[in-house]
Length: 368
Image 1 (cartoon, rainbow, N blue to C red):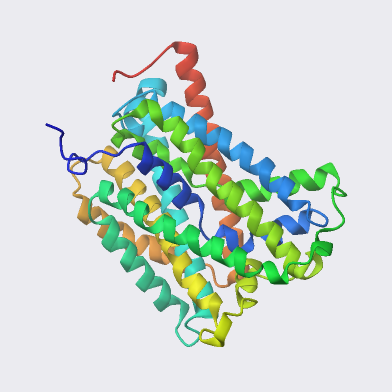
Image 2 (cartoon, rainbow, N blue to C red):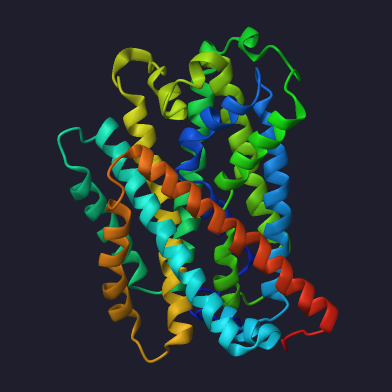
């Protein structure tokens, strides 16, 4: 008799695929056209997006390959096998801090944008707190349930994104895409650098793959999951350039939301499509924040297993809230985001590559 598929506390490759896409597709899509467009000419930014996406895809595969090499082992356990337990404890706690900061940044950005487009009379602090409380409610429960929630939310988010692109076809001007391939190679590299930051988040695989019931399928699922945001970001960039042109695009703070403003629903029964679009997009930001917060909780509990999950969530929540609200303005918050991007490169690319190299050289592999 077949066991109950969703009652065993494990996840399959499909949950991993959805989790990777959900955690990567977040607030970065709002500003990516501006940051990439500032470094490139015409519509050449799509080249940088693909370059940065391929780099992120490669390292997502490395992360998945590393974690799947040690099935059902936590990040602390297999890192201790490779580099000693004291070093593993330090790396685990630093990874948890990075994920907490990532959660705080997502909370602050969603609060700032919500104030601009949805709740102009509500303080940012209140919006951020309410959003974080919803995240806390999700994280306080089962991690497996949190991962499966992506199966519901991600299709809705992708549908909204595709609908946005289709409804802007009438405003698309092919002339705005010119000049083509006129960017210097340094511009492509700079644009790719900005893009890599937008594709971070897949480092959560270091934590969640321990729950996978078929670890050997995880690397393929991670690659497919990363391919979805790469394609989505490329199409969004081309559409934004085609609608606004590069000159206007790089002057906008959130170009992706601005093209949602251009949409006119037939019959004029709904005049603010950008509000609907952003409201739906909050789902994926919720997924990103919840997955990163949940991963930080798991990481810390692997070091301090006697602390109950619910109490740890309550302890970390005010720390995350105060950290997210610490930057006094948008500029400072963007600077914090840049530093989080650098720490993300360390935990999503540098450390996994080193650990996988050590495992390969020493021939260390976990037991299935």
